[in-house]
Length: 580
Ligand code: ATP
Ligand code: MG
Image (tube, rainbow, N blue to C red; front, side, top):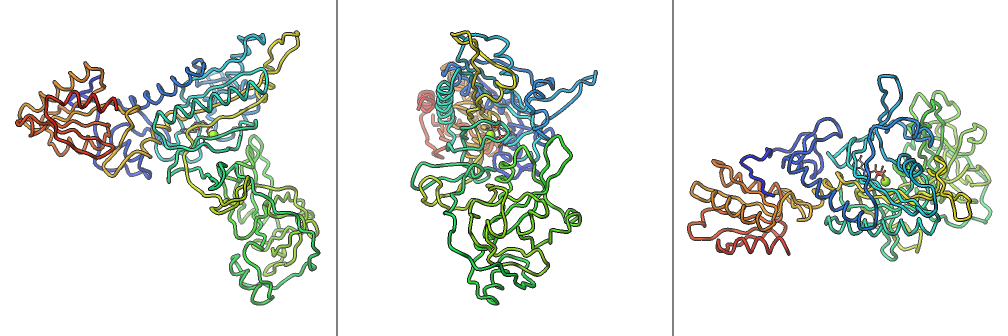
C-alpha cells in the first residue's frame, strides 16, 4: 500500500472543532480521520477508514481463531422478532423505530440476539449440530440519550457481536471462556490499556457478565478495583456489603425542631449543638424521590430511595438497578400532587400509609437507628429505627461507591478509576432460546433447550479509545497494528528531496510495508512536520536538507526520538523498525 499526500483525500485542521471536549474527538477530526454528519453520526475519511478496518481485521482474526463463523445480518429489521422478546418496548427511547410505505413497523438493530437465535433455529435441529458460535461486524443503531465525544458514543457505530449456542451450562462456560481469551488477545494486539471487570447484565438479562474497560480519565464508566485481592467491578455492579443487623434496644423516636437546616451538614451541626446527639452525616437517612417510567406504558411510579446522608445517589447505578425502568427527577409540580410528601423533610415513617414504594441502601439494616425527616416542615426525627418505625420494601444499589469503601470480597479498601467500555461478554442463558423456542433434538429423542452467550466489541469505539490513550500534545500516536501505514516519509525542500522520498516510498512498498509519502510540492517543511506529528504514524522518515550530505532523519513517533542515518541504510532501518 502506497498513499501519496499530493493526491490523498485529506485536509488536516489547525483548530480543534468547537463541539469537541475529549482529546480523541479533537484529534480524529483535526487529523482528517472522521467528519461529523449529525450528533453521534460520523463519516470516515480514507485514513480513518484504514484504521477502522485494521481494528476490524484484528477482531476478525481472533474470532476466527476460536472457531466463530462470520455472517452478516441486515440493520433494518421487522418488529416481530423484537416483539417476541419484549425488547421492541423494553428498549425504550434508545431504539430507532420506523415504518415502511405500507405502515409496517421496522427498527434499526441495536444488537441482534433475536436474529441470531432465529437463524440458528432455522438451520439446526439435532444435538449433533451443536455447539456453534456465529458473529458479525456490522453497523448498529442506538438513539443514545447523550451521544458524545465523537465516535466514542455514537448513535450509529460499528460493533462486532457474537453469539454462542450450547447444549448445556458447561458448554456455555467453555464458549464464554473462549471469548474471554479471544478478547484478551484482541485488546493486547490493539495495544489498548484495559481491565476486565464484573458487570451488570442490564437489559440483556442473564447472569455472568464481564466488561473490558479501557482506562481513560474521560471515560463514562466508573470501576473499582481491590488493592488486596483481584476483585474489580463496574461501579454499577458493586454490591454493598451490609453490616450485621442491630439487636440492641434503641431510644424511642423523637421529633426535633430543626429550622434552617437545608443541607445534611447544617442538620448534623444543628442536632449535635442543640440536642447533643453526636452524629455524623453517615447517621442521617436521606430520602430521594424519583419517578420511574416503564417503557411502553405511560404510568409513572413514585419511588423513594433511602441512603445514608454522607452519600450521593449515583444516577448510573440507579438506572442500572431499575432497568428497564427509567428513573426521572421528581419535580416541584410532582410534590404538589403528593401533599403527603413534605419536600426537604421526608421520613420513611409515613410511606406505608401513603402507599409509596421505599427501597433502602443495604447499610440500612434491621434495627439501625437514623436521623431523618419528620414529614413536617422544619422538623426532623431522631432514633428512627428500621423495622420498628418503618419497613423498607427492599434494598437498592443506588448510593455512590467511593474510593476506600470495603471490597465486597475481602474487605480491603477499593480504589476507583474511570474507563470506557470496549467489550462486554455475557452468559445469557435461555432467555432468547425460550422466546424463540430454540431446541435441539437430543439422542433420546427429547428436546434440549439451547443456552446462549452474547459478546460485543466496540470496533469504531476502539479507534477512539486508541486515540484517547495514545496521543501527546502534538497529535496521535498509533500502535503499528492499527496505524494507517507503517511509515510516513516526508520529502521537504525544493531540490530532489521529494523525488528521493518518492523512490524510497516505492522501494519500501515493494518490500511489503504500508507507506504514506508526503510528496506535496510547495508545502513548507514546518507544515509537513506538523502534519506528520498530527497523523501519528509509528515511523517517520525525513528526506530534507541533509540529503546533500547523504543523510536522512529517522523518527520514532511513540518514543519521540530522532536520528540522522545514511541514506543507503534508510530502507533497512525502516524495515527493522516495522518488524520490531
Ligand atoms: P454503554 O454502557 O457504553 O452504553 P452498552 O453496555 O450499552 O455500552 P453493549 O450492548 O454491551 O453496550 O455493546 C457492546 C459494545 O459495543 C460495548 O462494549 C461498546 O464497546 C460498544 N458500544 C455500545 N454502545 C456504543 C455506542 N453508542 N457507540 C460506540 N460503541 C458502542
Ligand atoms: Mg455493555
